[in-house]
Image (cartoon, rainbow, N blue to C red; front, side, top):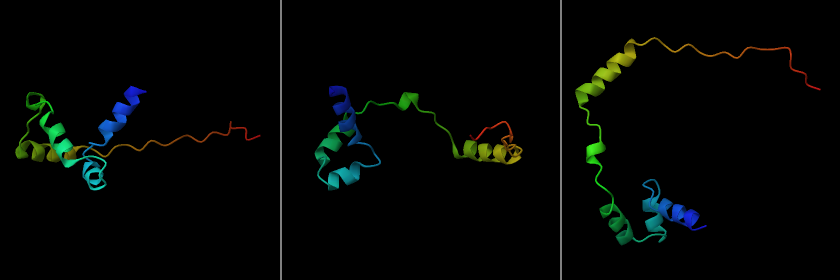
Length: 81
């Protein structure tokens, strides 16, 4: 049960809802700042790309053919009894 409680508590700091939770007094602004300061530095795990690389990726996607749609086959074997 403690594991579930910890998971719920972590959701209070989710970036999608943290501002709302501060406004509703579900978490304190100071607690959010503390949590942010305690986050590990993951810069060495980041993938750095340039604007030029993004433009190249967009150019490549324009050259790709459109995907072929998948069509489900109709069967008469279905028995609706």
